[in-house]
Amino acid sequence: MPTDALRAVRDRIGAGEFGMDERMQQAVAGRVDDLIESVTAAERALAKLPLPSVSDAAAKMAYLFYASGHGWKRYLAESSASAAAGIAIGDAIQTTIAPILPILEQEIAARHSTGVMVRAGTWALPCAVCDSDAVSMTRTKVGPAEQEQLVITSLSPVTVFRPVTGPRMQDLIVLLDTSDVETIINYLRETQPGGCDAACPECRRLYCKTHYAIEAQWSGSWHEATYATCPLGHEHEID
Image 1 (cartoon, rainbow, N blue to C red):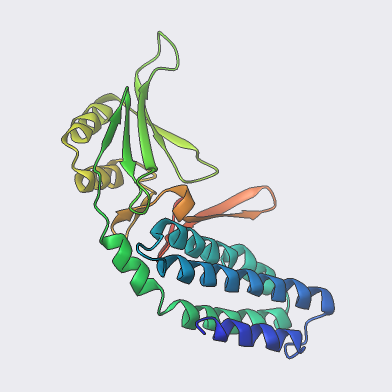
Image 2: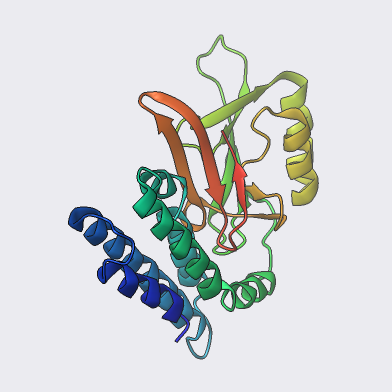
């Protein structure tokens, strides 16, 4: 079975091989069960006939990357026993997802891009998986006397949106009207502090919040960073 490597690590955890206390052992084994369920569900979605459910598979893989992400790794690193288990789990995850990711990538690549979607006062760039809004840009004013701005949504739970004003806004609107998504993304990367955080630098595709694993890293009340991992496992820092 594709999940054999993860199941083997879970069994080693249950057998007490890593020397964790009972509470930690149960918590980590439970998380591994979540990872197994995610991989199994993704594989099942890709095997659906007559058509694979790419959206479901991508969402499950995004959850897997979230559930095994920075927060959990930090939790496991709190003790040498759980850290050793974390390394074994990480290796098992890579073995488990290796045959699935190429299939998912092929299915995503086969989808037809819809380009820029235009609504009243709003432009949206679609998710490569489901065509939902990955990024939306809305032309608005805070008040009658205020400067017009283009409000760009962000994946970050900390920086929810980023406004653009003045000549850069006008230049961006011209680009949006051309419906050239790649040029729009490049312009945002070159001119905006947050770039275009919905664009995966490695995939060169856009994904929505459902198909990204979004993880904010905190130290008490201090925000350290926010990471986005696409359904193919590519991670980039967005905040």
